[in-house]
Length: 101
Image 1 (cartoon, rainbow, N blue to C red):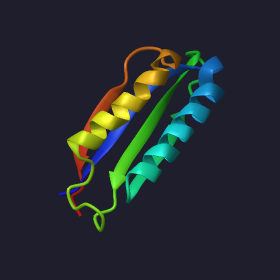
Image 2 (tube, rainbow, N blue to C red):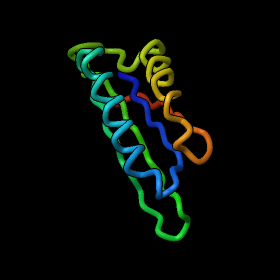
Image 3 (cartoon, rainbow, N blue to C red):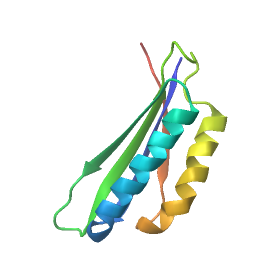
Image 4 (cartoon, one colour):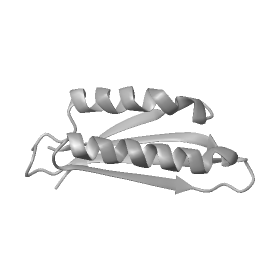
């Protein structure tokens, strides 16, 4: 089965542009370093809380690696993310899922 990562966290609205630019650059770099990596950045807006929920998703093409996101790649993602964690309001939460088909 192919493992996928879903990482979510809160970001104050005033940090949204900085976060989007920073994470997009990080994911572009990770895609260059990891053949077959598919990475996305999603945002759920909450107009009343002053902070939005952001989600990064990571998967690896089964043609490249049938196991999906390895522990080593997960550690690399977290290492890169440490540089901009100050933009977040609270911790990053990582969920690991196995693709069923």
